[in-house]
Length: 240
Image 1 (cartoon, rainbow, N blue to C red):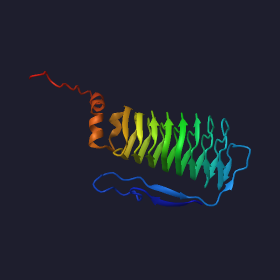
Image 2: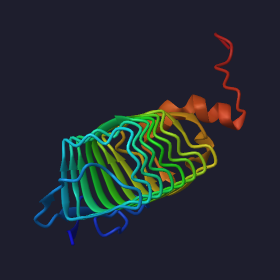
Image 3: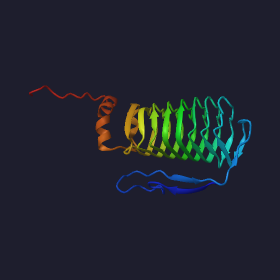
Image 4: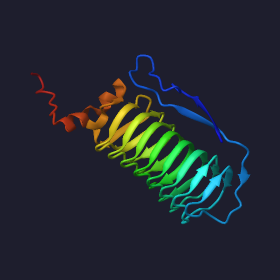
């Protein structure tokens, strides 16, 4: 089994000094020696343990209900790959790419996703725990009604991510660009947005209770917050 080492900022989940917010636990995975995967493709309910998938093309394949344990997926194509109800545990995914990957109602635990290029990923109803998303770009990430705990988005670009109805606990956005995020009916607990490189919330700004933002971000969000609260901002007549 991969050895997990708590690392990064606040790896123990304690509150950062003066921040009033608990930091996410960041696992660092040390995979055991891996065997190259030599199978023909994914299988529903397949069991993949201690394997290395390198430059594999899984486009259009069905791996629903599969379990990946102590695996490394590098440069794999995941276009329209069906992985609903999959379990990805103690694994590292590097440079994966694809559009329409279906991971709905899946479990990702102790996972690193590095330099991914994905679009329209379906993760609604999924559970993410001790997950790091580092680098890369993900367009239209669907996390509706998902549960995220100890998740870090770092140095990545998220275009129109949908967190509608999701629960985010100890989630950090570090040097991460959020464009058009949807927080409708989301629940935020110890969510740290202060280090986000760009914070653009399209819907659900009133759900930011439970998050911490910087003074600069507050000023940027002021018009959206005022609109959500029904506040009309009037600079007053000139010369008054």
